[in-house]
Amino acid sequence: MSVSGTAGVEGLPAEQQPPEDPLRAWRGLADTSVLLDGFHALKHALRFGARIPVALTSDKAAVLALAADLAPDVAAALDALLAETDDATLRALVPRLHPTAVAALAVRPSRTANLQVLAHTPRPAPVVVLDDPRNLGNAGAVIRLAAGFGATGVVTTGTLDPWHPTVVRGGAGLHFATAVERVDVAELPAGPVFALDAEGEDIRGLKLPDDAVLAFGSERSGLSSELRARADHLVSLPMRPQVSSYNLATSVGMTLFHWSSGRPPGAQV
Ligand SMILES: C[S@@+](CC[C@H](N)C(=O)[O-])C[C@H]1O[C@@H](n2cnc3c(N)ncnc32)[C@H](O)[C@@H]1O
Picture 1: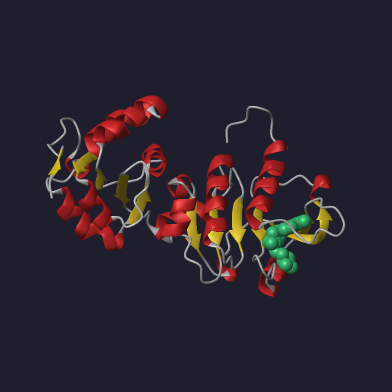
Picture 2: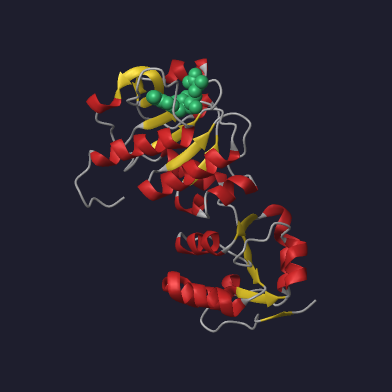
């Protein structure tokens, strides 16, 4: 097992220096960190300010070539951060290694900081609530949508961990671009709750405000009675008769698009 490319980087403060022994650092941090799996997850995490104590690859030249091609804005940061090790060592640390042969560990943002972001008013963009979601892939896709639309955050109720590695994988590293936390229904951020349900009022007649709390039900059973009791508006997405419902993540995408289409063209998201 070998590792190289970890010399101190001039100009970087001590806490951002790549570790002298990246494999040791990985083993020490793996249990408490967020695994960033593959080039795109690492790229997004870097762009949105994640703290990344260690990043490994079995082909640094290939990763830097990818960065030069697809993400020159993070190429220098990747060059400074990435340590190279052999493929077998990397696969032992990351069992489902991404085809781009790169993985990193990031520090999970503090819950207190995220809750402050979610509670802050006035809010420039809605918060998405997933009420007791069950599917990890759906949750990841929703976080990616929320990041893309510049939503303030994504909160989940129920038992699913929105920082589960499969959710992070589905979110493509964009957990760092929006505030992601699990809360109880009683702790939802302030703001008018628009709960999405096929029996609600047609969304096309509504303007969703920037401080809206947009709530979506669970894949199998829809909105819980607790969430319904908190709702100020029950809202439906247009759907042809005899179709029962849309997929959860696509419902979030349509609703965020409806919110954004009420803003001027070119508005910053
Ligand atoms: C797969 S659906 C849940 C279907 C579930 N059988 C039910 O009874 O609602 C997941 C969530 O997506 C949203 N959704 C799906 N289709 C919708 C529609 N046509 N209008 C509004 N919301 C919808 C709702 O929030 C719903 O709870």
